[in-house]
Image 1 (cartoon, one colour):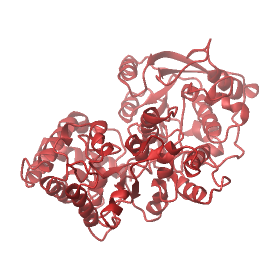
Image 2 (tube, one colour):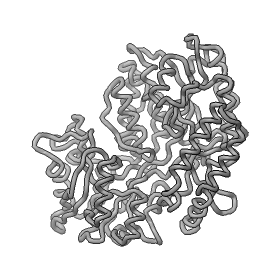
Image 3 (cartoon, rainbow, N blue to C red):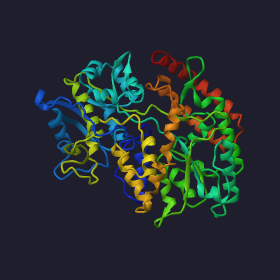
Image 4 (cartoon, rainbow, N blue to C red):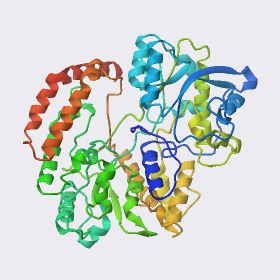
Length: 558
């Protein structure tokens, strides 16, 4: 969920628990992006009866959200038993650590395993690790295994983003890594207090100038009646999913940390382009006018959000899950006390703003050269895709465990291979279904869940479900996605390879310098012309070398 990752659903509760868990949900994609219709007939992989049981080893991280049924553990559980019974694959754990696969414990242990060539049959790897493993000749070419064992459903499913994620696991024409797929089509949007717009008799924002006028009015006219208001909520992390800078930058056709077309068949780095300078100039002007909290640079998302919840800020940029976060201040004592509306990114000029996105995955499954049964990985992938998108009643064991009932144990986390939908038609289906109250329109598990939640709000049964209505309803966040797709307004990073040698060496220091100078410019501590000095410094400190390496990669992978 590419996110950060970025990316899987947690058990959803209410109030703060609900909101916090949804923050995790939204940046990820277990339920957030299920796009395959159900029911449909899946090609079932070879069963245990046909070819006997094959064994494959892996390594695992025990996610804190996973809770075991009595008598079960990571080595012996209902999910592993189901894989063995249904597809004839016995999963063995070489080791298990606490945390998540991108957490420090797992990564340290995996790094040691790779260094000592003590790797299991298959395991999840980062792009940099995939590159390292290929160079060390430690993993198998999966091209023929995938062609032979992937079901027809899997082959269609894994190409639903146009094939880019699968291509990112292909090196010199060989499929060396299977991506843990995710939906890349996650836009940034702008969220505005619509009750304040009405109060001040302001029009909805269609252009960046409209939005500037709204922010200035909110800051100077104090519609929240607090005595001190600001125009926009920002926090210290530029690329935060909500209250970040990315959506604003995109309104200036500037993109953060992306490799973009240079107009000559190559790639150039977005952070050093003239559009970025103009976006920073805009932010500096806003800061001078008092539209930005002067302490934003030391506040995280939650801390800055206190100004939103306390009626001091009425504009922010954020992902489609933002209402789940806003609910902390918007819904109190069974009443909606803050009204919000969502809009596509306004543009600084006559060209519509595109919202930047990444590849949609940063984790890959690789198979050791020593593995005797590489096909086991593909069989596990087939089964996950079938079960996650159209489970039979008995296949609910893969999600809930042996009693087949939801109890908050998150048994789906036991599956060692996952692939999430690469696209979603929620934006086409849910707004219409909720508006017409047509329960027959939602098809996927995710759509049905979201529809039911939104209808509880619509029918007045549960006002706390306001956030779902603002995500999935007639004028909700996802209602904007079909337009963005139709008008090609998703701006995808064109570099999706492993970090280049100079990136590995210099990226951290370059990003640190960027963040430092951008903050100083925004906060009017230095002139906007310091941007030009930063660009020159960036190039000399390794940026030119990185650009050369990225273009060498691009020439081979266009």
